[in-house]
Length: 358
Image (cartoon, rainbow, N blue to C red; front, top):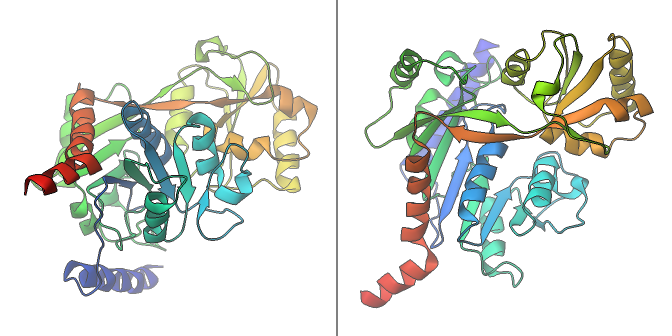
């Protein structure tokens, strides 16, 4: 695959060079735009980090999230409503709309068109700030803050370009970021671990580096019932870890603190479950001794909820595990201030006031 990776890298490098010398033009906007993305194919935790920033800003602003709507069965610009099907906007956008009904959640492959619609359509023109979910390579838009997420378990400095590896572009793409967050760090990472990661990334002085980890909520039954805490999992309980995400490794490691009886059943990222997949899940569960439970991710639960044919045994056994982001090293307030400070300084009202002063 290496020769193909070299050809791919040549094409991506030329494209980025044309943007760097302004032959291809990036457009700026007079509204705060924050991009949360990566240079790898999936698995860095974009959705929970986007939700973290959304939760932070919704206290004071009208926030919109704009994504591509990966694997949706619709085209063009779509604004999520309370009853919009997951097939129209995709699983991640549907999940965010359910959790944040007061936010504007939209999808459009053309981020420029999506931003224009959010800012000018009657239904959304009062938007104060736009979060771009996974638009790091969409250089037609120039965000005010570019946040790059890097997976602790697969550092970009040790990876290769597609198709030999998982990099969407060369490691030099790191330097377009204002903020770099190393995600999915172990809870007990030592100071030496932080220093090793910092040295490996070799960031520039203008870039800020943060580290994050996941904190888990209670296990939520997908088809109704009582929630369970993670501590309620017995040491002899068998867990079928059902995932359709790019990188489930940290979740598996975290669950091992509660039981060593973990059987992974992994599908590709954003996978829509077929009747054959349903049969595999049912067989995998039946093969486990009692007591047993199925644990899946919050993102996967969106697709499983709309999957037909799940047996009653599976429906009674399946729980999803909500996650939230925590910024490590006592830097959560610093990170929050960095985000809110940018939005405050570049809000529409601030820009208009500045123009009047000028």
